[in-house]
Image (cartoon, rainbow, N blue to C red; front, side):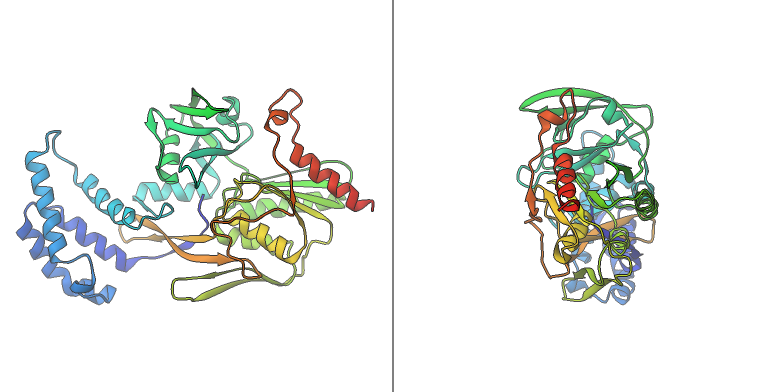
Length: 411
């Protein structure tokens, strides 16, 4: 799941995309060159780039048109739809970046992303994360009451294939795109658990995911779990946090395990509800331009807090974890986080499609860059999967957090 900022206007990129799409309507290198020459002045005025400075030049346009003509003339499996050609061109430009977090979205795919940020989608109800070393996706969390839970999917299951398509070295967006689908349809996941592979059929349905859950663990200790940072998360956290405080909680467990991240604005707004005065996080772009996100400290948490994390805690989850650790307002417990210290921005194009680009790096209040390293917990507690999935279903990390807070309260 990506840490990203709000959409911005991509008119200039949209013009370039329009030029490429127009060129593909026609067959023949000469036609492509004419189209490019006629639009060259317009492109330069919008983007500020000359033909020599841009890959979108007469030579590229001519080559693309020639390839299209050859495909249409000789491709054994038949004609390729214009829309598929256009999408292929845009995908190819993004793939050339060699950035697994970058992506091209059609208008339909962009709408799916928007709906997902509102907390609704059609799928199985599992969070998927990419393992950096093996480049394989795995399940980092399962939402309660969803098809994934009902089918017995577990945190840590490796997703080897989706409907027979191997996932090795796929992008995370491609994997999740295969898993999602129309309501009522079945998806077959080939999973690897404890070294053994097996197929698991899961029926997709609408997943309304509450991103925040809460409860009192006992009379003194409250619990809040944040599964991801979406548009709806801030209000959900505010409501649940108020309930926990109103229940008389004298200590808090904030559970960010398996949280893949999400929206930068959402995590900053939540941070402002518990952090002291100062920076929540700051970002820097390729030119060193710095943007700071501050907190006034008027709502700083005044009770002991443990933040639970693991290797599935990434991106926005690490923003909050890093700030808590830098300010010392809570104890980080669990295992080292994922290590994603970069920001993606979705830039909408003029035809309703969009590109997702890595535009910034982010840094904790003390200036730490956690990208590729993660955040080490103050107290290491390895997850006991055997106890968790056994008959008694013991969450040893949560129990460790509760025990630690009890000691703090009664020192």
